[in-house]
Image (tube, rainbow, N blue to C red; front, side):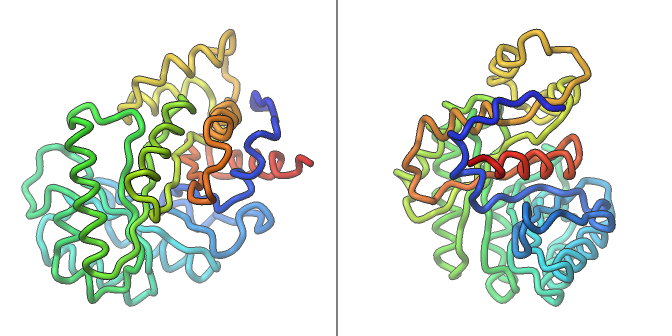
Length: 285
């Protein structure tokens, strides 16, 4: 069983509009309990380097047929030509995809025409596509290669571009383990962009060794010490860790979040484990 405090502090937030990330190859076996993840909920589909883009297209169509809202990752550096981007966007639009997450993507070195998420947002094919909501990346702990000021400036420009082309912007963050830092980031974003909804990223129910491995891979370094401290003697044990301590801290730091803050799960240990935990959490009085 995962370690959990099952506190009621996060009850309002965990009962809100949650979303999760799902590898495109997992959609065929994705059959969540609709009482936990109701139809219409957002399911983010990564744009994985080296994987055929058709897998994401097929996965998004499958999710729509299941009644869910796919949010397709569009990584700028993954497109080798402008035509590749336009074809990918057209295929999603034909299938009824209306939500996308715009990212720079990997690798840092690229040969294609796009280097940043803003390049995609500025492409002339986007306003005429089916995309009506654009999620933008947020970094509660900062970025190892980009200053905080540069991140803020870039986010402002992306939100402004969305406004210009009548697309609704939203923010979804990288996962972290320090609830205070995440709450501070959300409050900062609410002050700068009060009408933009924020999704705070959380690692789902995952074994500690795997969680630490993903954190290092994704550059989530600053709050690893918080994870180690909260995990205590469990560190290094093949046990599952849930995000209840993080959600409790977020809720405690910003009890009046105005309904503008949602939770987004990265289920590194599998979507079922995380949704089972959410279901248990939601049974609290």
